[in-house]
Each structure stands twice: as structure tokens, then as C-alpha cells.
Image 1 (cartoon, rainbow, N blue to C red):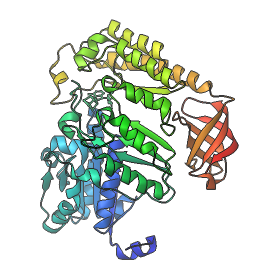
Image 2: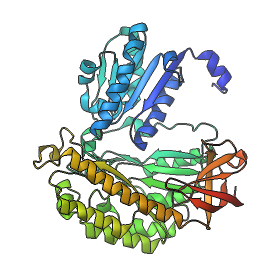
Image 3: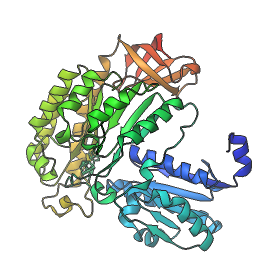
Image 4: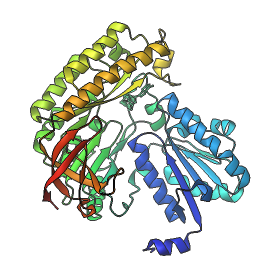
Length: 454
Ligand code: 5AD
Ligand code: SF4
């Protein structure tokens, strides 16, 4: 066993540089890639020049994400020319989608590995290093072997991601994810709970459960049964203080799950519930299987079960056929729901999706204008919601020293708002009562009122 970083330094002669694009699922998978390559003798470095292996874990959900990956790859061309022994591996969604094509656009790449081939990374890297061959692994087998690769959190880490399911059966017409991550697969509940117990034993206080559509989690032949059952089991794990999850599809938001918010003490009062549009016509075109009214009814039920719950969402503007009236319906829904926060995107056409065949495209200038209107409205709503916390005492789980000032700590409220306040670094991992003095758009500022739990 290698116990200390000192020993690791001496033993390891190879360095890994990794860059992650995209979502939390990719962040989690990068942790697994680091763990796999560390077992194969690679130590992580943040210095590109030092790397023997470069991994890009990519995203392809919107066209911009694609472009960012290729421009990053461009930076590596000279490095590869100067050091032909360097191995460059591209994983994630873009790798899954493009396969061999990546070599044509970026001949400096050695290995392309898809979303269900992460477990093969060490073997592929070793072969590429030995033979200099160009290797591609983009099969989509029914079993995802990497789902059960557990990792040990680094010292001082407070929160951890835990993947509970992967893939998607929904086929929203704009979305490339089902093509790139395959059909839904749920992990056994027992395996998830064991992983969370181990994380808690390693000091983790908050777990975020990940899946493209966690609501359709299904623990076959196990007591946990559905997602609400799984949450209940995790609620009983000693040492875990907070549970979060992402992402939920509104059509699958069950009454049992809504009730869980009022019932399970560790489940944080926050739900990310992407709505995508406020127009029923657009929602139909997107194949979302709910109307704006059904969505609003579900949010009302959540707010009844759990007053003060924070509701955040995703919105797409400029979907094919979206008229000014449709866009106004999105604005109307925003006024009605008043989201705590919103991630908004201009529709981006993705190859292989149904919407890519739709006529009546919205011009880019119109998309940009709609995005601006929507974002300035949301900023007003977010600020107004944050301002309501001024003068209140909030339970804050301390995550780390603040990036801006070494005397400050950064933590989050249960509703997922960032709070900065002055305090001792030894409070990291503890829950602190903080009186909120001032609210901003992206964070709150407060003062310690007391330490509520250890
Ligand atoms: N164009 C724009 N936004 C998209 N999203 C997914 N696919 C597209 C696309 N083709 C957004 C959705 C989703 C979020 C993760 O990304 O809002 O919820
Ligand atoms: Fe994409 Fe829709 Fe599946 Fe989300 S639910 S991953 S938007 S297809």
C-alpha cells in the first residue's frame, strides 16, 4: 500500500493531466479515471508540460461544448510533436459521438474512449504507449462496468458525488444524451448505500446522487424499490448530514418523492427540475410529456410538502418553431413559478436528434435576444429571492476556505446558496449557524451565530 504522498512521489514516474468539460456526471467520471490511472502508477499534475498522459473528458450537449474541446486539443499538438511518447486520450460524450473522426480533426490524439468504456482506460493507455497505435473504444454494452468504481475522497473534502443510475430513455427531441450514454441502467441499492457508508467513514458529510433521470431509478428485487425508497435508505446512513440529487424529469416526479422532502431530515430543500419551456406547443415538439400547467402543479405540490424549497430549472430558448408568443409563455411561467435560479441555453442543433430535422429554425439573433430578456428577468428573481434571507439565520455546511480571502470560509445553505463568512478553517466539514447580513446575485454574506453540529 502507498500511504503517503511522499512515497507516491518516489514511486511514480508518470504524470497525468486531466481536463473535464461539462456536467457533474463528467466530474464524477473524471474522479474515477484519476483513480484508475493512479492505480496504474500515474500521479496527477496541474502542469501540462509535465504530463505523460493527457485526458480530456468531454461534453457534447451543445455545439459550443464541441468547439471548446477541439480548441483545447489544438493546444496539445506542439506538445505531442516535442514529445512523441506523450499519450493523449479523449473520453466522454464527444468521444462517444465522434469515435474515429476525432483522429481526423486532431491527429495528435492516441486514444478515444466512450462513456461505457472508462474501465478500459488503463489498458488502452498502456497499449497506446507501447505500440503507438491509435485506439478507439466506443461500444455501448448493456452493463456499465465503471458504475461501481469507488474512489477515496481527498482529505478535507466535504461533499461527494455518487452515481446511482446512468443513461436515458426519454429521447427529448433536442437531446443527444440518450444516443451517447445509452439506455437507463440503475445501480443496485445495496452497492450505493455501501459506497455512501464508506464515504461517510472518510469524512464526507454531503452526498449528491447523480443520474440523467434519477426519478426513474429502479432497484430491481431490492427493498429500496424506487428512488424515494433509495433516499429513505440513504437518510439512515450515519455520518451523512445532507443528501442532494440531480437531475429530475418533471414527468417522473412521483408523489412519494414529493413527500420525501417533507419527511426525510437529511434531504436538502432544493430540487433542480428542468422545465425547458413554458409553451405547450414547444414542450410537445421537445417530447417532454407534460404541459406548463402540469409542471406548475408539481411545483405547487413540492412547495406545499416543503415550504421554502428552492426550485431551480433549465430553459431552452429558440427551439425550432418557437414564436414570440411561445417565448412569452416561457416568461409567463417564470413569473408564475419564480425560480430560485435558472440555467438557460440557446437551442443548439445536435446531429442525430429528432429536432435536427425540424424546419422553422429560429435565427441566432432572435435566440440571443430572447436569452438576454430571460436572463435579466431571472437575475431580478434570483436577487429578490436571495434578499429574503437577509437578517435570517441559516444552517451552513462549511466546505472550504473562500477563494477570495484566506480569512473567509465558504459553505452552502440547505437550499444550495453559497454563503461567505469570516471563520476558522477548522470549521470545514461542520455545520454552522450563520446570520445573513447581505445578499448578492451569486452568494450571501454573513456572520457566525453558532456551531450547531459537529
Ligand atoms: N440545445 C440547447 N440546450 C440543450 N440542453 C440539452 N440539449 C440541448 C440543446 N440541443 C440543455 C437542457 C438540459 C441541459 C443539461 O442542457 O436544458 O436540461
Ligand atoms: Fe436529455 Fe431529456 Fe434525457 Fe435529460 S431527460 S438527458 S434532456 S433526453
